[in-house]
Length: 328
Image 1 (tube, rainbow, N blue to C red):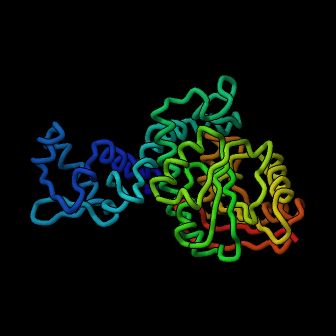
Image 2: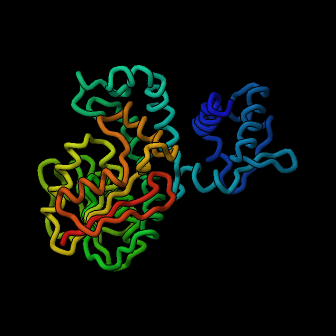
Image 3: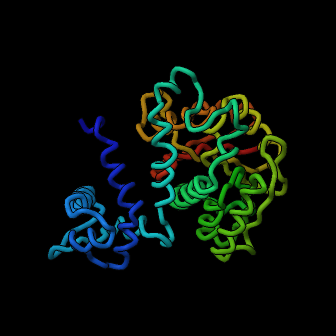
């Protein structure tokens, strides 16, 4: 029953976020059923049901007849907060929910369902600018929280300059540079993406330590970096492209350099864990890739020339571990 009705909880969260409920209650503000109905133009019946549902899910708490944000909602669902997660909620609701509705089609055809590979060059080609904005906000929020955990699990103190390959909005670089005061970083991604990263870096006040560089990692990688980070990148691509990218990483790194692959790792037995296995199915509806195992990554790293390969485990929204390889 829990599996069958899992979408009920998600759609309750998504509808409440779409109605801006949590931002309306920011800072400890409380609201009654009657007041919410009046404010949003709702009938009292659904207004009460929504507040009850959010309270049942731990998103709201009720005191003296008024509903307020829980610490969870206050931290992650209020617009403008440092770790605002609403972009991911919106992306899941407006983009992924429909794609997952066609999962059986994706299984039969081995093709994405959120975009058309015959008509589009990539999942971003021709996409609604608003949906793209949601995507990048979603990736920034989930990446920022994951980067904190990565920085606690993996010691970056011995590296001077990080190349974030496919670094998106720069969330990993911002968080890691906050944690490691001597680290410098470069966000390497397509030019229109590095423009987004530049804005986020400026907002964080780290333009003196984080650079951006535009280009395709299928063509080249910038030099002069002693650590490469591949976070939520390799699960987008098939095995051949991943092997080629890891070879390119090996060639660009100096002796003593390292590559860190941060992902939701499927276990070597391919029986779970559930977040990694389900993210892999999400890759089916979105990309040509899947979520891989530590053994698969280790074999590809070894093939590329890396040695002293290890897996470090941790828990975060977008990763449960990192596979690390070092260049002799």
